[in-house]
Image 1: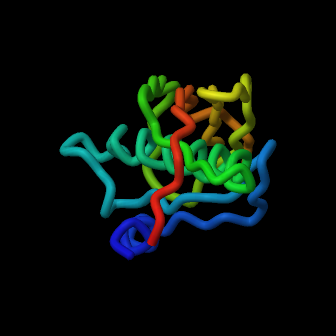
Image 2: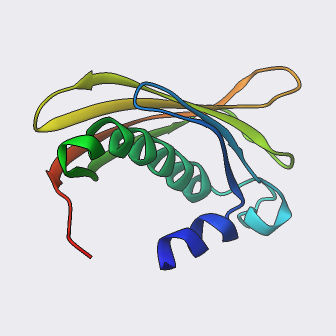
Length: 129
């Protein structure tokens, strides 16, 4: 599936995947730099939406639903040049029709916050394959 290839390309790793917490990491290095030599914010936004979506889907899949992002707000807190970043996603709200997840990306060595985001997701019927 194309979405899995995209996640592999970004080197997203999921160490814990559940309906109330998703933990993992994302690669961040010179391949992801903007012209000024720091990681492009689009990488953070993509990781934030990916981790929130994975958790949201886990929360509703047993009800024959999936979750799709409808809003992504990402704050870039400090620049980062290179090294994997820890990612932790947790739900703020899990309702019958929508979910709201918060996600943080931190450096593993000093735990400084690099970016944080909030993703609103709509719970929709799962497509039949």
